[in-house]
Length: 267
Image (tube, rainbow, N blue to C red; front, side, top):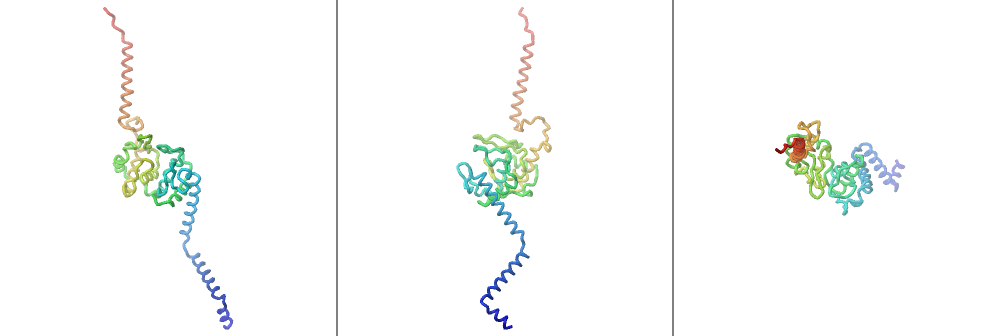
C-alpha cells in the first residue's frame, strides 16, 4: 500500500492518468461512433477537390480561377449543381466559341466528373441542386400540355420542335432531351430561357410538362397519322408548302396542256 501511495504522489502520475483516460475515450468513440457521416464528409471533400482541379483545367479560362466570371464567361457563384449538370451534361459547356447561342454537342466529361464539377461549383454559393429521379418522374400528359402551351410553346413551338428568336438566338428542339435535363432547364433557366423555380412552378407542374414533352416528341407514343410533319413547325409552314408545290404543279400541268394543244388555223 505504501508503494501504491508513493506512486500516486509521483509528479508524472497525473499525466499518466490523463493519457490513459484520453486513450480509453478515443478507443470507445472509434468502436461505437457511426462512421457513415465521416465517410460521407470525406467522399464529399474528395469530390470537391477533384471538381476544383477539373474546373481549373477546363473552365477557369472563361469563368475565372474562382468562378467569379470574366468578359468571356459569366460568374458561377450561386448557379448551383443543377446548372452545371445541365450545361456540361448536354455538351454546351465547355463552349467551343462564344456566340449568341451555345449549342449542345458531344459530352466530353463522364457523369462522375460532372458530379465532381457540380460539387465544387456548389461550394461557391447556394443554388439549385441536381434533382433526384423522384423529382422529374413523369406526371399528367393532359395537364402538362396546358402548361406547356401557356409557358413554353411561344419559343419551343407547340410540338417542342424549337424555333428562332432574335439576334441569332433560338429555342432548341426538345426531342431526345432527357427528363432530368428538362427539369434542370426549367429550374435554372439556361441562356435565354426564364427560370421556373419551385416557388413559381411547383414540382408537380414540372413533372406534368415533362410528361407532355416526352409523349409529344416520341414518335412511338405520338405517331403522326396525318403524314409528313415538316418538322412540326405549324400550319403556316405546311400551308406554304402546299401552295408552293401544289400550285406550282397545277401551273406546270396547265403549261404542258397548252403546249400540246394544236393551234386553230386561221380561216
